[in-house]
Image 1 (cartoon, helix red, strand yellow):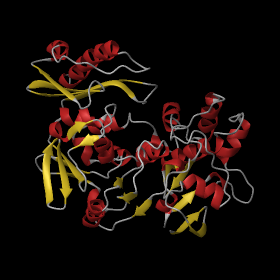
Image 2 (image 1 turned 180 degrees about the vertical axis):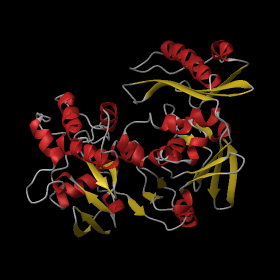
Image 3 (image 1 turned 60 degrees about the horizontal axis):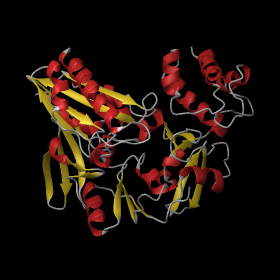
Image 4 (image 1 turned 135 degrees about the vertical axis):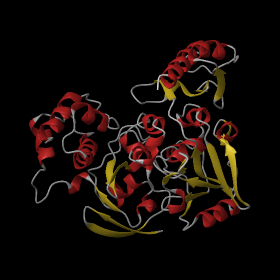
Length: 264
Length: 150
């Protein structure tokens, strides 16, 4: 497919990338490209300029602090995360990344790209909400930190606004996590998914049922199904699943994820 | 934009429009038509190449992103007309029917065997997940890869 004409810039620093994004209304960040290039082929979006973030070392890498906090650069690929010794501190991260698409997509696709595209069927937005991640957003005025629960604003919309970039994700220590999904084919697009984390009570974030992850809490996995029913969800219908079926899946998957988390 | 890229050991310099996908650059500008375009939506894997040592689908990369990169395509596998053991195994196991997916299958299997010379059957299947064969000849493809696993 021939894309619409587009300018291409490869900045040498995050500061330069931010300047390019701020100076051009039609500029969009190019991370792994595993979504945006296809979106451009379909003409669903036609940015005037792509600002390529590949090669910016400031946005790469995974660090594990003494207190167990993980810091993941937004341009870290799924494959890099899966191969990282540090990332094993929170095992659910690599477990979920290993179920995203296929080798080629995991080799190029990035953690930050998954979060910033915020497609409601993506795996990582509910996971980050469930485990209490914090997002660092870089902009012209410096950096600010936003909790994951406040980062996702709508379909394809996040708190990282025009002229800003998600630079890194900070994840607290913990191991009692779970994730469950029903997908179109093995490791395909999620029809519904749920991420859970146990820290005293059970916190579950549901994907695919609303524009942004929906959080429910319960005292134990036994109470999760009722909590999901109480959330008054109205999931979308499409050719793959009716609203009622997605609602049913949300209950089942939330319980599965919570039981997995509690069992660790 | 000026792009300098090494493909299968040969360095090329070309003037490329930023909107050009890497797969079109390989096929149309460099006349390396071994890599195929199947779906053009990032699903089928027929366009898979090894990009700076990492397996990737060349329909989801821009040619300008390859500036300074080293790329391997299916044309670079055999040396002096000799098939690699993997290519020979595809032949012997009838691992291709129409052959359209074969270049991508070979690149994915090559990348797998470099990283893991002794993959299990499950690991082979997982490694080929991003490559679709519409003749559905998966059994023979997996058999071929298994036969060259150490």
